[in-house]
Image (cartoon, rainbow, N blue to C red; front, side, top):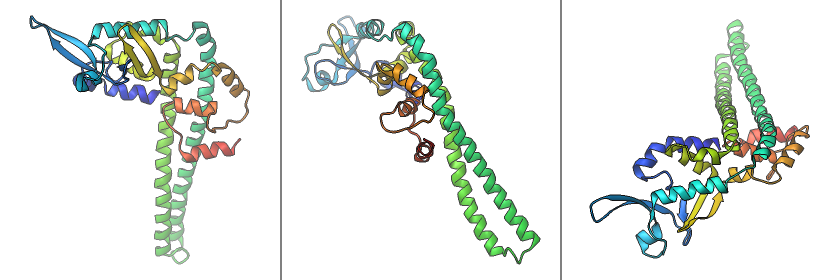
Length: 280
């Protein structure tokens, strides 16, 4: 989730420049399923009008969906948020504390992994120093060629550990950012959408929808993102209660733990998954 919103925020200005409208990339034709394009048309008196048009009609002349005024499409999507994209307020209020608690629990394991790697980095550096001290104290006991060979091995191990440490610290930071994003998503996207800026609307659309299909009378269907579909699962509350009662966490395919990790915006490194499985 966090990765989606971050990437969309970075791409916001480029989207307006090259695609023309924040809905491009989200809205699709409800008749043929192809992407809607942004275009400007000039009226008889030279006035320009903004439209979204099916690429099947515009490029191939193969679709019957008419050109749709941008303002009309915006109203369709806003109405869909306000009437259909709703997580019941009481359900959200009951769900959010448990969701955030378990989210922090899952990412707390990554923090422990950071601490473990930091200890290993310190150990390697200590071994390097000990080798040098031993060589200086007794060059015959630790010949120079052996010192160089061992230092090269430790250098490689240190580089690998420092690289792993950097990734782990980045994941912890992502987890914290994702908690804020999840809280925002759970707190009622429909109410925020009408008053949002175009850039934030695009970010929210990309977080909630993989595709929004449109017809002449409004939104005909939607395809939620995997992340938003996970938040909307009817059994999420019971799954979180079950997770809260588990002493150890497991990260197999389809597990709540793995759903939470993926919701955070990244797939955990194999070593992280392996270390967590071994503890269960």
